[in-house]
Image 1: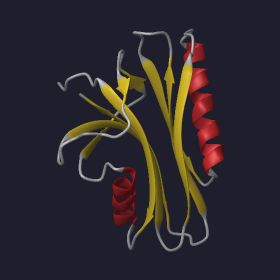
Image 2: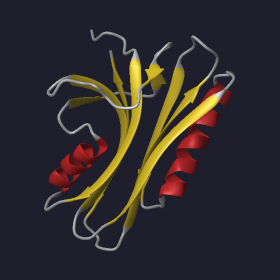
Image 3: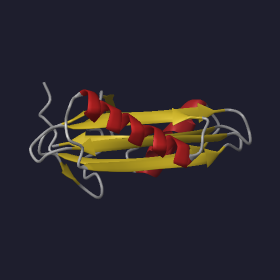
Image 4: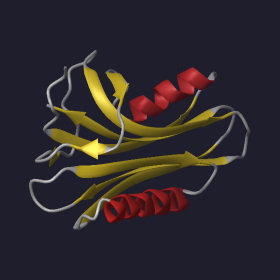
Length: 153
């Protein structure tokens, strides 16, 4: 079992490459998380997790991450990804939502913000703050857009 993360950061990146996988890898590098091993997690921010401005994580580390990503091979297509964290009362857990699609950055950010609000509503919890990060990208050959909430101890 991994330690419960105590820190988090929202990141986003987009990139172009020769293959779908290398476009994803370059988007990870652009977002600042290309040299760690992502463990995809669902949507809960641990209680007392503190927001950081930049992940300070050793290369190769196993890193819990909630992310949305989209890769496209259609030149000219607009793609976007966004992630949001909803924070409630002090000491309570938060909720993370992610989205990716063939939309603008604003549409992606609006989608994750709405999902966070809905998740707090059906949990019957008070939402005090929403943090959002997103990115859009106009595909040239093969492009990827990614947004993530990175969690670490």
